[in-house]
Length: 98
Image (tube, rainbow, N blue to C red; front, side, top):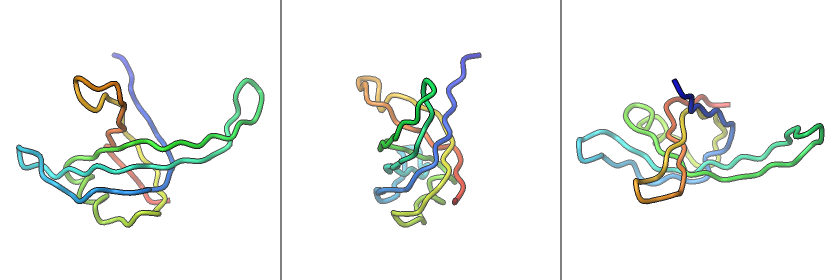
């Protein structure tokens, strides 16, 4: 089976208001910021990025209670934002406060 698994430590930069999907499932869109030093080809490299995230169900409810600026360890998978989009989104299936 193919693997699509992401673990990223970062800051909750911003979040939308919690909403319900058409099927009534809680959903939350948000943005994660990350900055770190990584080793690549034997050399140290500073890395900074922001990525859009989405969470559903209980994870969305929990994330919806956090204020921007909170640092977390996010776990999930990457998928296209929509069928017609090339933009990737991190679907967070679990998170822990750092």
